[in-house]
Length: 95
Image (cartoon, rainbow, N blue to C red; front, side, top):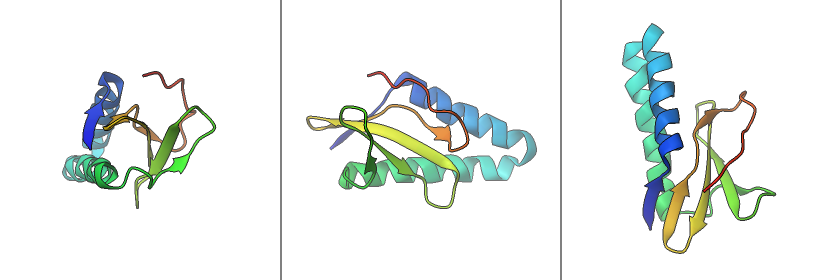
């Protein structure tokens, strides 16, 4: 399955990395890698995330970290919509 990161999801990942790097530079890359590994796992197992009430959207909690990845499977593509901290208020997810 092809994984497609929407631009906002890429921005979210960079924002997360930058924020963590301010106080713990060594941890910032580890967190980013864990998020990327979780997304790669979704490519092989797209039904892992829990379904949401929104049309066809699912979300997956990153194991051991407070981040959520909302996504949608469209044909043979897994579209990563956002990456956000689980204490953030979810925002509108558009594809």
